[in-house]
Structure formats: structure tokens, C-alpha cells
Amino acid sequence: MKNMIKITIALFCLISIYLYGKTNLQLTIKEYNSKNYIQGIDVSHYQGKINWSKINKSKIKFVIIKSTEGKNNKDKQFKRNWSESRKRNFIVGAYHRFTLKSSGKSQAKNFINIVPKSSNSMPPLIDIENINISKVKDKTIFIKELKILENELYKHYGKKPIFYLNEYNYYDYIINNFNNNIWIYDHSNTSPVTLNHKKGIWQYTTKGRCSGINGYIDMNYFNGNLSEFKKFIQ
Image (cartoon, rainbow, N blue to C red; front, side, top):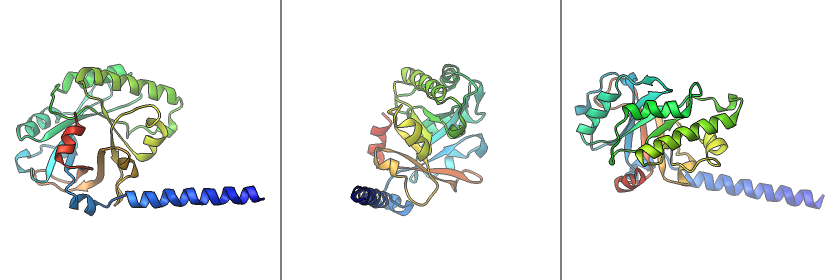
């Protein structure tokens, strides 16, 4: 009985410490803005033809552009978005939507065939958002093919890819199998605790507004300033 009481008290203390730490580590969007953390957008063909000359460069510092999906699909606006955003000196990156319908190697080839190699652009970004990992029958296949894709892109571009995911996927499948930086989506008002363990990008809304783009746009924060961001992407 005494042991049970001790265990209960210990668990209560651990949970309290965790919740206290979690609350105090998180920042609101307003606090991110007040710290002058830099903002970026992510785009794809869903935004149509973007008027890049109208995007506010004093507010938007980086742009993440969809390039490819699976082994064959190429975003029809990628080449234009890449070229126009680079012309206006945005820091750019390209993301690939990973699937389990084809091998990691064939997906890497699809990405490499369209995305230029540039020393001043972001590392390749791999989106695993569309995979319902909880329904993947064999988790080892998921990890294996993702590692192949990640390794192939690392070898070609010389930069370790960044993973786009949610916090649950990060803790359940990524943290023990990969050592990559993260781009995490969490559309609550407070930043994911995950970002306090390492530098990363937070997609905080899919309903942002940006001059030069019709309709909603995904908005992102990097939890640091511009010089820290430049180090992060190297």
C-alpha cells in the first residue's frame, strides 16, 4: 500500500512537471511576432498563378514550394514559382509529398529531376502528412522507404532533408529513427513543444492571407531570426 502511494505521488509529480514545462515552453503567435521570428509561406498549384511582385518582402522571408509527389507527379506551377521567387531574392525550398505507392528511390529521382541544386536554397523537404501512419500495416516498410528517399536526397543536395509532419508522428516514428530538422504543422494558437527541442519551422495556419495570392495561404514561422534561419538551412 505504501509503495502504491509513493508511485502515485511520483507519477503526479512527473505529470505536473511535464504540464508546467509544456505550458511555459509554448509561445503564442503574438509572442512569435514580438520576438521578430521570421515568417514564410508554402505554396503549390492550388494557389494558381501567383503575382510574386506583390508579395511583401519585409514580412515574408522564405517560400516553400511543392515540387513533386510519388514517383511521377510534378506540380504544374513549380518551375514558375521557383524561378519567380528566386528572382525576387526570397529564400526558397522545395517539398516532396512522400507516398507508399512507390519506392523511396524512384521518388528521389522524381524530385532530383525537377528541383535545381543550389547552395543558398533550403534543404529538400519531405511531406509525410498525407500518410495515415496509424493504418500502415508494416511500419518497417514505411521507415525503410522514407530512409532511402532521405538518403538519396542528402547525397545529391548535400543537405539533410527536413520532415513535414505533426507532433504525434514525430514522437512515434521519427525521433527514434531519424535525426532531421522538422517542419511541423499545428494550427492551434500556441507553438508545438517539439520546436523547443531543436530549431524548426511551424506551420501555424492554412488560412493566412498574402498580397499577390488569391484565397487562403499556409503561413509559417521559423523560431529564430534571419541569421539563425540561414544557419539552419545550411
